[in-house]
Length: 276
Image 1 (cartoon, rainbow, N blue to C red):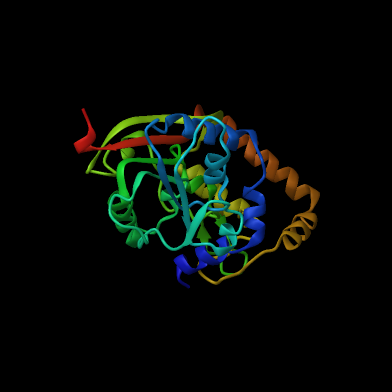
Image 2: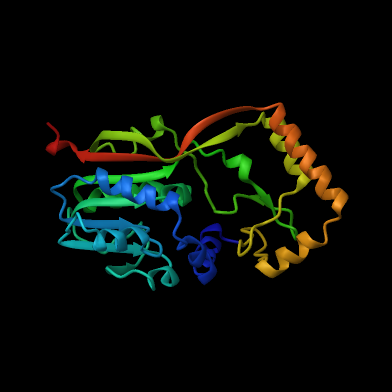
């Protein structure tokens, strides 16, 4: 199956956006930190991959910022139903705007999803429509192998949120050559992460065969597990199996290193001709 089409099908599910729209402290913290980084002179804003509009809606309703124009674009018609600003159904590879139409273009938790064949084109389109600034956020040093799941039908191994790349601070420096990086820092809540040896990751994946989360669609065979199916599967796991799995997880942590880091990375760029 085509991975891109599966990803689109996943994001057309109402349940996906019901989960995302939950008002959590970490999400509120992320958007507040993003808003604080938006330069004061910005009057027009485009959010590429706006999802259900949590960010653009917050910009519209924020008491301390007044934007002249706020626009959201996304590939999911289901997500756009919740967007209360100007909005368009389109892909990031073909934005329906003229060159330099927006003072600022944002893309929050999007770049990690973009397939290799589209990545350069999406970055080029963001640069094309941004007049002065670009601001992006991505997961901070995400370990893609650590979150892999296995399809119960075809045993395909994949990331359940369709993340295909990971970013560190060095990766952010050269994303937009036409722009200068003026800010790059971790944001969001700090959590403790375990750093597993690759051999431990592989052995754990084969032994435990982590199940697909609800609503996830296998990119190889299209298998889809509903919330009810997942609940039934968990309920049938013998108590002994759950105990062994718990002991294995504890053993992994005991023999692995750990570090503390913020959940996301934020990077703000300014077009070079505007740089001092």
